[in-house]
Image (cartoon, rainbow, N blue to C red; front, top):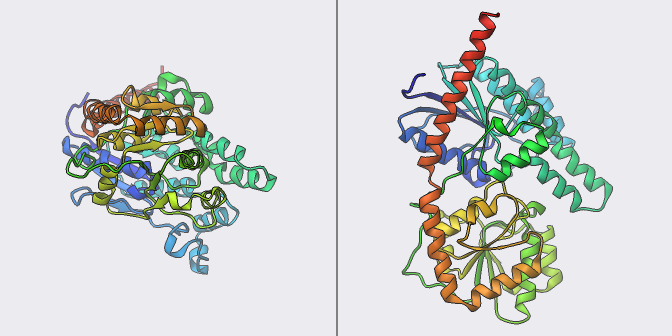
Length: 422
């Protein structure tokens, strides 16, 4: 088997690191693969990735209907004259999420004309029919960060009105395609043992097809700032999403319980959706003075927010990995996390674990950390050490290359068997 540098094509339909974990994964993995000496090209849909200048990006145009500067715009007639654009617009207009499907078709068309001799195509969880077509011609692997079925089920349970349940089911209707395509791949990368078990169960794929490669944490970007003193009774959380999966509702309720007994400040890195469920909950509990949203901030300010905090809380109901908890640990902040999904695999014994969807357990754990600063300091040191030794992007890239070579070998073996049957 060739052990030299590989030509790698990374596919990602959502690539901006501010759009979530998939963008962070793409940015750091592409950097680390390049640093190992491999030739990496990123093929991306909007919002575009923020990569270093030595990593080429091929941007695939689309209607970009989720662009906040022109959200759900009405395309022009010339745009809609193209069938794939029409499918995209109709999907969004009927509360669906067609991006994985349409990106996959566009990526297939792009690679049909710009193959460039890629040794491997690595899909970042689009799992589209286009990927199935690509895999028939080029060795292909996909990363599935966590089973999106969990997002769907939690979202459906979080509402009572039938039309709201239908809306969630409609939005997640792309899951059927992802299940079908994932079953055709010989190898799938995922980021935790918990994710492997859950994806295997929900997608009906044997566990031996998966390879578990933990995400890395950039400890040069996320680090302690000793000269900034921690502020007493200050909590930080990094997710302002109204998405039920992220569990912010339960943290807000926990803060309300604590605020009855002591001064408390929750700083949430992100923007408040006015009129959304979190906004309504804060108003109904009357704790607006205890909660502050930072809005979008620069990374340097992000790390300063960690440095000021007495404790970081990750209240997610489920995570396939949990980058926020790893980033907080890298900054030396004591962490409280739920046991949702793979979070215990990241935290280990370097933080406090509580059951998901339990405001009382969160309130008790937060109070314990605030009342015992020596324990908080010890947990902060343990968290930083754990991340340094277990979660690096170089290590993740090295293991990913091992999977690439495995997939390439399997692909060539299958193609040879087809060429010489019997």
